[in-house]
Structures are given as C-alpha cells and as structure tokens.
Length: 149
Ligand code: CMX
Ligand code: CO
View 1 (cartoon, rainbow, N blue to C red):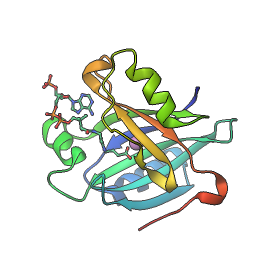
View 2: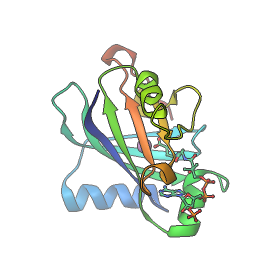
View 3: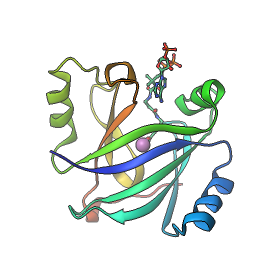
View 4: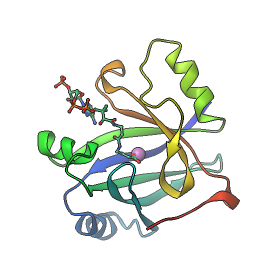
C-alpha cells in the first residue's frame, strides 16, 4: 500500500543555494546530501516530517551532474520547479509497480533502482499519470541505509 508522500522532487540549477533557501526560509535543517550517478544528480533530501509509518516526508532538491540526465533536460525545457512526486510504500515496491502496470500505466524500469539513502525506486510515465511524473519509493530498513557521495 502507498502510505505517504515520501517526497516532492524539485529541479534546481544550484543545489547548495537552493538548500540554503529552504533552510533559511522554512527552517528545514535536517539535510542529507548525496550523488546518484545513475540518475545523473547531486541531490538533497530535506526532512519535513515523520510520516507515522516509519517513513518520512521530504523535499528532494535535484541538481544535474550531466547534460543528458533527466533533470538537465527538464531544466532546459521548463526551468526550475516541481519535477515529480513520490509515494512511499510500506511493502515491496516492485509488487506495487506491477499492480499499477496491470492498470495500463507505463512503469519506466523493469526492476527497482537505487534511490536516496539506499531506498528502492521506480517511476511511472507522466503521460499515463495526468501529466505528473510519479515515483514509487520503498525506504531502506534502518539497518540497510547507505549513503554515498
Ligand atoms: N513531469 C511531467 N511531464 C514531463 C516530465 C516531468 N518531470 N518530464 C517530461 N515530461 C513530458 C514532456 O513535457 C514531454 O511532453 P510533450 O511530449 O507533451 O512535450 C514528454 O514528457 C516527453 O518529454 P521528454 O523531454 O522527451 O522526456 P523523456 O521522454 O526524455 O523523459 C521521462 C521523460 C519521464 C521518461 C524521464 O525524465 C525519466 O526517465 N524520468 C525518471 C528518472 C528521473 O526523473 N530521475 C531524476 C530524479 C531521481 C530521483 O528522484 O531520485
Ligand atoms: Co525522487
């Protein structure tokens, strides 16, 4: 089951400046920064709240590290702004994705890839979700969390 908003993904040109804006303006001080080579981003997760199901709800700021990454492409076309929403599941993310694929929604990955802090992620095509790029997230168990970069 999808039990929370895990995060809102926001594309930005300058990660450090945008993190500073969120800290200063909203007081979100719990920040985790990492590089995800596969996704082509340097990213920051700013925790907004505990979600009550063991997960959290965060703002994910995304700065491209390559010109051919999805975030670079998005910034070139649309500029800075909301890029995707991510729902958190309390179960297996692939099972969740399979169920949604069965309703005719395109799932972008054959199997989950690595997201922030060791989570498992996949995406649904925005054209099948009323214009919203949608991510599904299974948080790592507390003991499995890995941070990189
Ligand atoms: N939200 C809504 N619509 C979007 C979109 C977005 N973020 N990105 C692209 N689109 C739309 C475009 O507007 C375009 O629409 P039109 O055909 O009407 O013009 C259409 O989708 C195709 O756009 P495109 O630029 O050709 O985009 P691509 O097909 O190359 O890529 C997508 C789109 C979703 C398949 C690609 O961005 C992707 O694979 N995303 C998943 C991975 C990702 O986003 N990683 C970064 C975040 C990592 C993280 O969250 O951890
Ligand atoms: Co995301």
